[in-house]
Image (cartoon, rainbow, N blue to C red):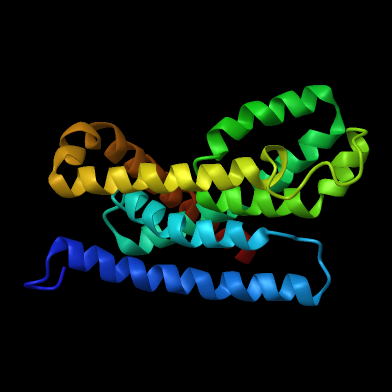
Length: 212
């Protein structure tokens, strides 16, 4: 923290910059979708909500890590998993059969508190809503973009995640977070760091064997 700066000024300045840095690619994505004639109506609400929720979420989970380099790598893996693999997997589970849909609904409970998941899942749901109407034998146009079954739930969860992450941030700054949360969360962060070290070690062993 800059010497002499208040905590409010410190976090507010960082947050403002991060929100702008999220809004710019979000605006580009929306414009590209329209330019390419992709039916992603109202997706701008998802990108806007994500731009405000994701920075606070990152601040909240950053307290799990002590080293910036390791945190950066693990956060990228985390975002690839929850922003790429998980939403696509759940989209597939929803259309295979009734059992896979039930499994998807169970998994969704754990994913919906991650902003990048809600952004991707909500966007895919908007784009694929006509397919869902056909599979569910609904009338054309019945699933509007911001309906709960489409992007309504992800949009709602982006707001919830913003609030929860903001609360975590406050608890940490007042010291209560360290007292109540760190006995559980710090070991979790250490476990993630150990997983990272293990992956790096396996990678080095594999490279060594390939050289032989």
